[in-house]
Length: 238
Image (cartoon, rainbow, N blue to C red; front, top):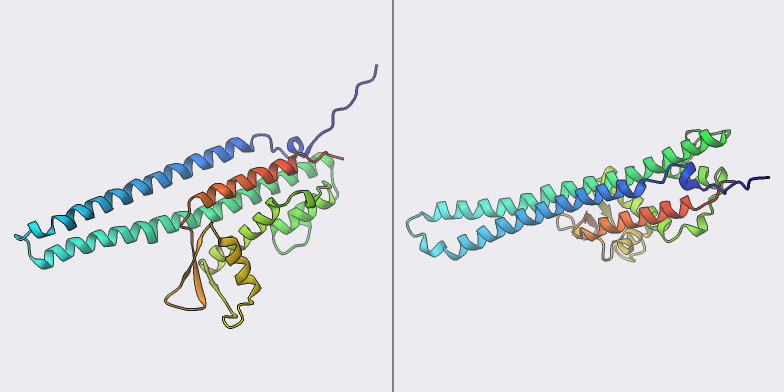
């Protein structure tokens, strides 16, 4: 009696079986941090409103002292919005991209060991690790990338944003302010809609700063990552 060999998928070969749990932990952490920031900001704003309303009743204090207290509230709000939250969200952009890159790289190395391929991701040429990973998945694992959109397109746009955060401190220039035909800038601008803000930097008309003012963008990133890995995982191993 012969046994029929079950088809293997990249999900098991690349070790993608427990990725959802890792994403769950990341989401829990982000929710915890965002809730913390929201509560702290509301507390500061509430205290500021109370102070502002009762300012007239504080006649026993000098104007200089009252201005100092008011400035302290304003400084606290600035620190939360423009320092703490900004640095946290920028760091999350970098970490999420690195997380995906690491999962795919480790998965490709597992596949290479399992199939005893002639080369690994590190042996390939490419502008970056994601380019090498894509080449490996297409050539060795026979992944059909035409089936990976819109998730792969999203991650490619996300990579451009991450690169600006890492290499240019989140700043981008529109080098064609007259005709507005700067492809790189317009690509980021189109991707930003409903996701993050392009804020004029230092009153400049052509230099902008990426500001992650929408926490739901991070959930969208995770959702696309999960969907992308699920599609890759469903590919049958030849």
